[in-house]
Amino acid sequence: MRLTKFGHACVRIERDDTVVVIDPGMFTGAEAVQGADAVLITHEHMDHFTEANLRAAVEANPGLRIWTNSAVAAQLDGIGARVTVVGEGDAFDIDGLGVSVHGEWHAVIHPDIPRVKNIGFLLDGSLFHPGDALTLPPHAVETLLLPIGAPWTKVAELIDYTREAGPGRAVAIHEAVLSEAGQMVHGRLLGEGGPGTGAPFSQLAAGESIELG
Image (cartoon, rainbow, N blue to C red):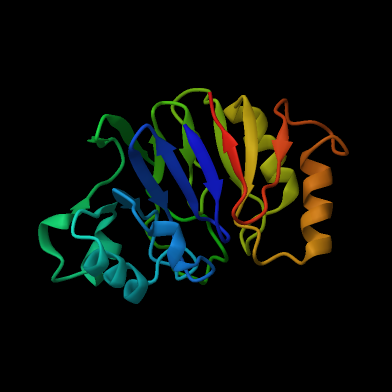
């Protein structure tokens, strides 16, 4: 599999002839979904999902399919069978690429702010995108996409989460709310300059790709 990082929480996964894009929100350009077979949306917040952009992508690509939770699907009324609602424990197949769904709720931002539904996606049993939550994958994965900057995160929790998840590597996502300096500080603490997570940590620039095993 090949992983390409796009804006903020968005990644594009390519395996053989199958292209899957996860969370192309407001910080992601339209090029992320061009030619995609499927889009997976973890939750309804605009940095992960923008209705107008996704409707435009569906109109431009008649073969594009979407898997997401019920809250996002409700905003895509009219697209019909091209949207599939999934939740915790579900599993499906995208042209031979297996996907399972894990988690239910967005992380707590503040007790006074209502929580929204959030699901994480495990692709091919080896790559996990948790959305906006520190949901543990069902087993140690090769690649954990780690949300490093958000109103609900702190570095201590990210370190402990990575240790508990036990991935082969951690790759940063969800960094748009951090300044360049903030990204460097977080990267140092989650990498070789911190107490250690047990996993190599990397930060990719927008458009940068890595090959996954």
